[in-house]
Amino acid sequence: VLSIAGSCAHLLQPLVTGVLTPATVVVVMLFLDWRLGLATLVCSPLILFAARISVRLLNRMDEIDDAAGVEASGRVLEFARNQPVLRAFGRTTDGYAPLEAALERQRAAVRKQVWMSVPGMLLGGFAVQVCFSVLIGVGASLALRGAVDPV
Image (tube, rainbow, N blue to C red; front, top):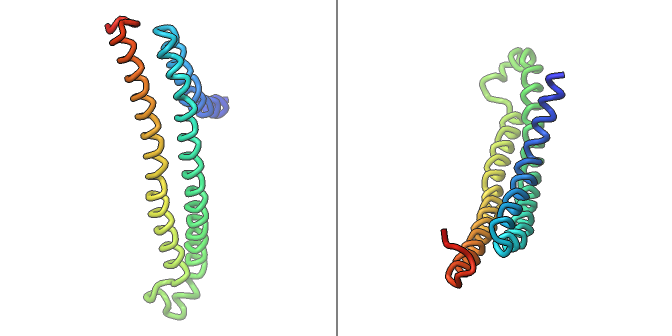
């Protein structure tokens, strides 16, 4: 029962952070001023689009990293299973080339994953900054025209 409840809690977290929190912000902005709410609503697809591209990039990199990790794990098991044979023929000091190659491919995949995650993070951050700039501009414009109370 506890594992089912834990699973539900883990599934609800992305829903809350990805849907309910932004929707709450839009609703609050609509109550504060309908024009600010409308600007928030118009900016939402830009943030959603940036988030989807970021997730797509990260998922692609996770697949590459997972494949390299599976290969390296398989090579470690192969190396462990073959220890008696390798020791019998004195091959323990030279290393095990297939394992070393798999570990190097895994390191390269991790490095690539780090570098490929940067554009997604930059895109998401840029989208949020653009939306905040738009909201600040709309709010300042309304305040300067006296359409809303500046406080």
